[in-house]
Amino acid sequence: MAKKVAVIGAGVSGLISLKCCVDEGLEPTCFERTEDIGGLWRFKDNVEDGRASIYKSVITNTSKEMSCFSDFPMPEDFPNFLPNSKLLEYFRIFAKKFDLLKYIQFQTIVLTVKKCPDFSSSGRWEVVTQSNGKEQSAVFDAVMVCSGHHILPHIPLKSFPGIERFKGQYFHSRQYKHPVGFEGKRILVIGIGNSAADIASELSKNAAQVFISTRSGSWVMSRISEDGYPWDMVFHTRFKSMLRNILPRTVLKWMMEQQLNRWFNHANYSLEPKNKYLMKEPILNDDLPSRILYGAIKVKPRVTELTETSAIFEDGTVEGDIDVIVFATGYTFSFPFLEEPVFQLEQNMVSLYKYMFPPRLEKSTLACLGLIQPLGSIFPTVELQARWATRVFKGLCSLPSEQTMMEDIIKRKEKRIELFGESHSQVLQTNYVDYLDELALEIGAKPDLISLLFREPKLAVKLFFGPCNSYQYRLAGSGQWEGARHAILSQEQRILKPLKTRSVKAAPTFPPSFLLKILGLLAVFVAFFFHLHWF
Ligand code: FAD
Ligand code: NAP
Image (cartoon, rainbow, N blue to C red; front, side, top):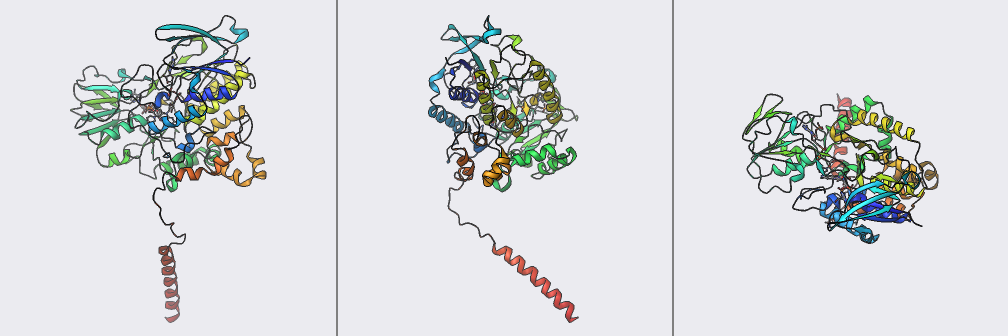
C-alpha cells in the first residue's frame, strides 16, 4: 500500500513536495491554511496572520532559467526576472500540468504534529488540523514541513533605545505594501537586506528624504551581468564554483572585491561591508546606487538612540523630523505545530541534517523543506530536497547514524560562520552549486561530467562552463527526464525571447570603427618607418 504523506503548506515548497510524492508513488495530502496556493508569492493588499506578506513591487532576484523546476521550464515569453504575479502564474500552470490541486485541503491549518504511540516501530505521525472551526485528526507515514520561514518578523526594538518615545509611525517591512501615503515624508529604513534596498529605493522616488541605517554594510549587485545576461547564470557555473573552492582564500577575496567594486566603489557610497570578505547574501538592486547618487537616499551608520522625532547615529550625527521608521530587519521562524523534542530551535538556528532531517528521530519520517537560504534560487534547491526526502520515506535512500548526522551539523555550522558570518540574517545561508550537487548525489542524479565528456562533449562543456540550472539534475539517475538535454541546449532562446521584441540588424562582427582604428595604427607605423629612413 502507498505510504501516506502529510505536506504542510502549499507554497513553492509544498507544491514541489506534492509533485515528488506523486512521482515516487506516495499518497500525499497537503494542508494549506489559506484559500489558495503560492505562499509568499501571492500578493494581497492586506497582511495575513501566519502567511508571508510581500510588497506589490517584489520582483524575483533569481532569474527564470535558474528558478524553474527541473522538468518544467518557464514559458519562453516570460521575463527573465519575474514580478510576483508572473511567478505565481508559473506555479499555477505547474500545479495544473501535474494535477496537484486535488491533493490540497485549503483553509485547513495544521495545529499539531505528534509521534504516534508506536512511533519507534512505525515512524507514523498524528496530524491534527482545523478547518471551519472543526478539528480533525489523521495518521500519516511521513510529514513534509513546508510552512515557510519569512512569516514572523524579527523586530529588535531593544536595540533601539528611545523607540517608545518616538512619535512617528514605525513598522516591520512585512507590513509595507506600496509607496502611497509616504509622499513628502522623511523616512528611516533600518537594515540593508534586499527588503530594505527595495523599499528604500521605491519610497525615495516621492519621499522628502530616505535614510538607510546599516550596522555592517552590504555588497550590492546588479541583476544584469556580463553581456546583459542575468547575474545568476554567469555567477553559478560549475567552473566558477570549482574556482571558488580551490583558489587560495586571499586570491579569491581579492578577486571578489575587484569584481564587486567594478560597478561602483562601495566605500565611496558608504556601503562597503564591515567584513568585506564574507560571502554574505548580497543585495540585488539596480536602483539603489543611482538613488544614492541622486541624494534621494543617504546611507547612515547604526542608530544608537531615537528621540520623539530624531535618530541619533553611531558617528554622532543626528537626523531630525523623521516621520516613519521601517524595520527591514529580517525574519525569525518557528514551528508551533511540532512537539519540542522533534528538533531544537536556538537563536533562529535549527539542528537539522543537511538543513532537512532531525537527527534524533528513531525513524526518518519527517523532513523540513525550504528551510534554507541558498546563494542562488531556492526553487531548484527545494526540488532536490523533496526528491531526496520522498526517496528516504520510501526506503530507497537511508540516512547515516545519529552521531554522523550530529557531526555533520556541527561541521556545517562552523563552515557557514566562516563563509557567511554570524549575522542573524545568515543562519540559513548555504553555497549554491555545492549544496545542489550534495543533494543530487544522495539520489544518484548528479551529472557525471567525465563520462559525458566522452559521449557528448558539447553538452559536457555546457554543463561545466554554462549556468548550473536544474535541468542538469534530470539527465541521469532516478527521475531522468528526456527533455533535459534539449532544455539545457535551448535555454539561450528562452532568455532572449522576451528581450528581442524589435528586430535589429546584427552588428557586423568586424565593426568599421575597429577597422578604422587598425588602419590608423598602420598609418602611424608607416609614417614612423619613413620618418626613420628619410632623416
Ligand atoms: P512560503 O511561500 O512562505 O509558503 C508557506 C505556506 O505554508 C503558506 O502558503 C502558508 O499559508 C502555509 N502554512 C504555514 N503554516 C501553516 C500551517 N500551520 N498549516 C497549514 N498551512 C500553513 N527566493 C528565491 O529563490 N528567489 C527569489 O527571487 C526570492 N525572492 C524573495 C522575496 C521576498 C520578499 C522574500 C521574503 C523571500 C524571497 N525568496 C526568494 C525566498 C522565499 O523564501 C522563497 O522564494 C519561497 O517563497 C519559499 O517558499 P515556501 O513554500 O518554503 O514558503
Ligand atoms: P535580511 O536579509 O535578514 O536582512 C535583515 C537586515 O536587517 C540586515 O541588514 C541586518 O543587518 C539588519 N538587522 C537585523 N537586526 C538588526 C539590528 N538589531 N540592528 C540593526 N540592523 C539589524 O531580511 P530581508 O531583507 O527581509 O530579506 C529576507 C530574505 O528575503 C532574503 O533571503 C532576501 O534575499 C529575500 N528577499 C528577496 C527580495 C527580492 O527577490 N526582490 C526582496 C526582499 C527580500 P546585519 O547584516 O548587520 O545583521
